Length: 137
Image (cartoon, rainbow, N blue to C red; front, side, top):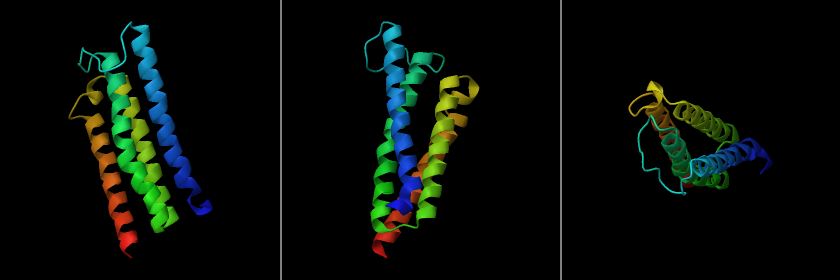
């Protein structure tokens, strides 16, 4: 597993990002006197909505990426290729979170935020194909 250390660290960072966003979302809702769960005022202009959505986006993106990444290690995917995909995904997810949390035009649907989300999905799809290829080889 030593050869996959960079990938393992990247996956753990994705988990920490998701956990950190969960705590941030919960604390932000608590300070606003709201219960946990979806924010009723679902508008991009509402910072609580953006905090909630960036957390949920991180959760939604985590399992479809982390599971194939672990399977890639089992299947023997080239460690550098896997590390490249993992860290590309980590960087995209961090930029996505920052853009979404800052709000404004780039954070609105169909803009930079959406492009980043789609790009992270593309990296995930590449990882799935690479992992499947390695498993069949």
